[in-house]
Image 1 (cartoon, rainbow, N blue to C red):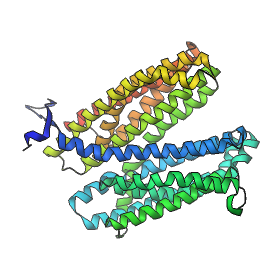
Image 2 (cartoon, helix red, strand yellow; image 1 turned 180 degrees about the vertical axis):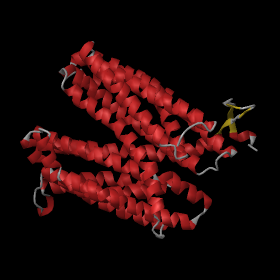
Image 3 (cartoon, rainbow, N blue to C red; image 1 turned 120 degrees about the vertical axis):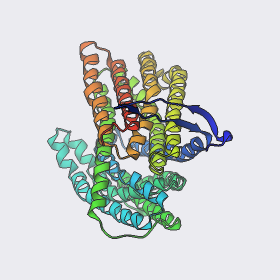
Image 4 (tube, helix red, strand yellow; image 1 turned 90 degrees about the vertical axis):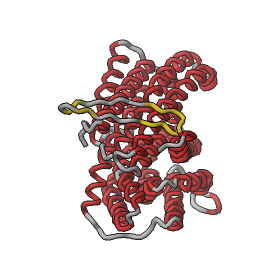
Length: 465
């Protein structure tokens, strides 16, 4: 029974599916208690993503001091690293719903086995991906990347190949801490990592304190050291929370993590890939289009952190609830209402800041791009109306191990819808950056709509897993 003080909105969603002579009816409750629980979980996760962006910006700014060739080399290498990293971290994400369910059930043996399975998953991913990244310079040459850029970035990318190992281990610990609803620990540690990263960048890149000057490679060495320190700090914290101890090796647990996680990794890669591809493509258009796109992509990155926080919070909260219980319906209803609220808020904020931001960032360097940037931000604002709700729906589906459909929807929205529309709008209609962002907004709306419809079907037992 819900207390009156807890209920802020009671919405009754009549989701009926005929099964012979009967229909199922589900009541979705939106409660203050569940909204607070979701926000307490989502806020630090969003902050964590924002802090990670700050580290990336720090690397870019400090690398720029070494010249345009160094900056381009790091950009190429880091994009390749990001593709591999997002795929791997998505696979590790398959541990999340399993670990959350075992934790709320108090199943110590299952938790110990999952900790072991998570570590094995990390090792199985790290070895081939680390090897692939180490050999990236040779692959980039084959792909036709300028030899001078490849040589300038070789030291950096090989340092990042080594960095991948502790960062995937950090990914396992972060997944566990999120599953037991302790994300604040991660945020505090990552906040400390930002200034450390800047200091280590300076030390290794410029050769401070009598050390050799490594240049751009120093940024990779700094990332490696920060990754190792972050891993050590998180290991200490999970031990302090009592979330430690290995169990027996169960190949079935590892297989289940991959079964759930691989579609998550592919879906994440599809989302990240369309933005990376659009950025490269926009750079091949006019200076005006490239400049306008650069403004929108930064704003989209900030918006994505809210998607990430809400999605992870929704997945964790629902995975901790017994299927079919009243609490399950509370989580679903509240998460979807928060998705709609966040989307509306992002849309309003973007529309309000479109003109001043475009004017501030482009008036002096590319005045002709200001009006284009305003239109592009408007298209992004439209996408944000549905994006957070779609992210919440995807998180809720993943909590119930429904990951393959979400992967398919991501591929459809981003690559079956958005990518061809980008080509048509820019090549046939010559719409430039505006066409790119209208296409990507359309893809986001399609993806979000499919996820919401899949959640609706899942409520009635009609969704495939």
